[in-house]
Amino acid sequence: MKKRIVDRYEKTQDGLVIIDVAARRVEDLYEDFDKTAPYHKKDLDEDLVYYLTECVREIGRGDFVIRFMFERYPSEEFMLRVRTSVHKFFMYQRELELAVMNKMLRKSVTLLVIGIVILGISLWVNHLVALRGTPSFLNSVFAEGLTIVAWVSMWEALATFLLNWPQHLFHVRLYRKIAEAPVQFQPPSIDHS
Picture (cartoon, rainbow, N blue to C red):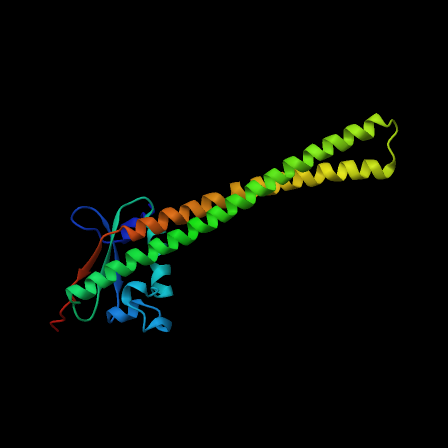
């Protein structure tokens, strides 16, 4: 019998899944290129972001906590910085994703409107060609070409929206879920050997 992926994770007494993150020190959670930035404005390390997002994908709809463990237990100030960093970083990622969705929506609406306008022009041109009796080859090609362009434009609008929207919406929800997750800290284990 296959073991559920979520069973690989430890759980709290309340039944929340624990995503464990171990690092030597708090500074290891951040990208190196912005060492002078305040902690609440720093980007989280790319590997940490990937790890957290993949864990949350595995967990699915279940609730979780993010538990950090360092070689030395951090001060209250550092714990607050880590909590703030995780929250602000993933809320920022969410905002970026929403901006992409808005841009995509504007593009889809623009293509749809262009397609409808061109379809209207195509119908008008087809009507004019039909009134003249036997249409010339060039008039027929032009009228049919307009019809094809109209349908391609409308198809592109719908395809862009229908195929990309769910993926972006998933990321928006994923980032919000991580941003709002409780962040805990575990004291370092003491080796008695």
